[in-house]
Image 1 (cartoon, rainbow, N blue to C red):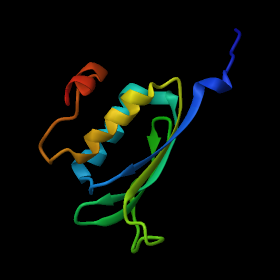
Image 2 (image 1 turned 180 degrees about the horizontal axis):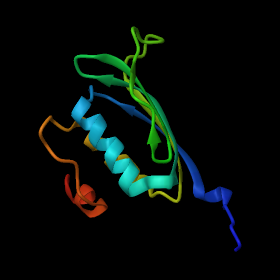
Image 3 (image 1 turned 45 degrees about the horizontal axis):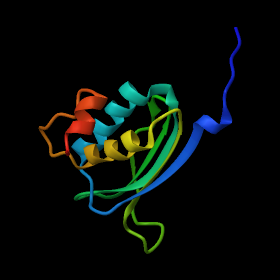
Image 4 (image 1 turned 45 degrees about the vertical axis):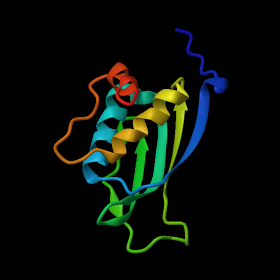
Length: 122
């Protein structure tokens, strides 16, 4: 077996998310990430502004996400959600579009496929 990891396939993307996210959206995005990015999501880390809760730490490695931890206070004056994703072979447009799931309202369902995701807001 010949296993190559091409470093050029590995990208780091940083996102700032303007409006607060929902718990339902966070759960939906984690599910979506596990199913569609899987082991290609090398690392996901962020501080997210969850509506009604405040700052929550998100940490994931591939398909394993730590339970979300609430922070008592923001670490600095910047109160916008920020998320860094290190991925291997994941299309940037799909990753960026997946962040729309973070705003899902309770009781709604996340996209069932990448195609559904990409068609959701067009």
